[in-house]
Image 1 (tube, one colour):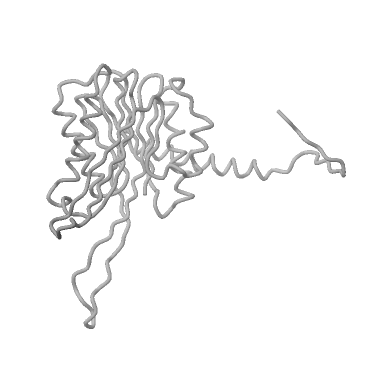
Image 2 (cartoon, rainbow, N blue to C red; image 1 turned 60 degrees about the vertical axis):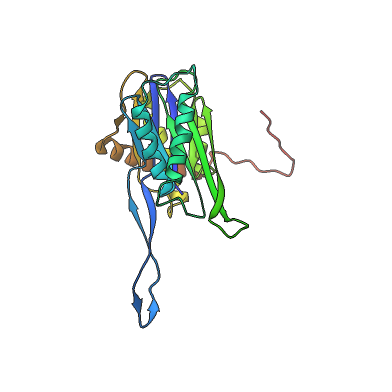
Length: 266
């Protein structure tokens, strides 16, 4: 699992993702006549692809086919002349890229998989964010022939913010509480996006860690936030978490207790 966040600011859009992946490597040897167990390890990688031609940024959640779908979408976006709010060209391109990934030689016979993409198009006024979930489940045919199944992809347009991956993580509270659409600049949204991912890593450290952020203005090309700024975001997020913890445990000035019931409404 992972966490990928897309936000729209008043001057463009932002795509933020963690960088941790869990990899299982199959072992082919034996030890004392017994097959070796698969090796599981963690590493870091980028989860963002960009199409400079259209300013489109693509985030993926998961492994293998999900990353491949994002790469295929970047290739397809680069080959399209233009995207417009007046047609569904981007939606069709997303669906086609996901199907491309599912039907490559390495994936065509996998029995089942699913994936998610988050696509950010800062040049769109009405549909700047797209969330796409795709599936394919294969079962043996009744005649005992090759596997049969059906591919499904459901791109969904979103106006201001979207999350894929671990979208039930409690750290998303900060996004729900402090984000407002088209109000803040991209610079003002950097710490918020970073703090959400940093806080999510406290709650799901086996799945979420690290941070990568790409931004793009409405008329520009995607740019990646550099390591010096990412380190500053990380430090400020840690400091903010410590301050919140201290404030929440700070004794009140005059605690009044009594037998009579007291209720406070808004």
